[in-house]
Length: 168
Image 1: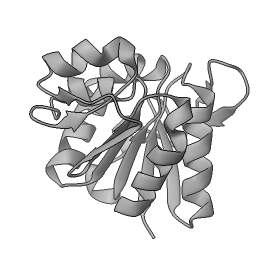
Image 2: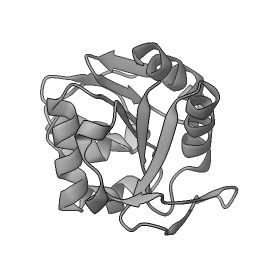
Image 3: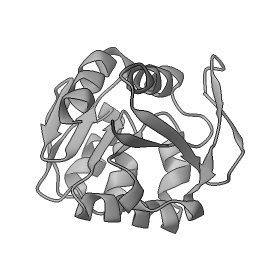
Image 4: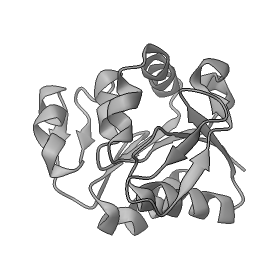
């Protein structure tokens, strides 16, 4: 089974963390929640779920994971300004690992500069950011381009999860 890293900070979109996280665990994959600090309580913006980070970003290496999942909400904004997070995502991409982001999750991919020439989607509010990063924006529930999987909103979670599981 795959080792999956969830990159998480406070104010993520609750269901965009919970649904993929539960689905990956139910499928038998090993999941790890990586935050900016180890042992931090990370709360969803809607207050329906919270998780504790298993590891800090400074403790992880891309080599150890088969996939990186980045839930949306406001969390990606906090993650993308951290150099270690950006470098981790860059290395995972260079190694051909699955990198999946939903809603605002692709913001971290933009900062890691891995979307040039890649078909992708996201929350409509960052559509221009994707285009400016060199991505070809597609308004679809899920877009798979090589190792990169992107999705738009909580309504698209079933397709997002399906494509992650297909890749693994």
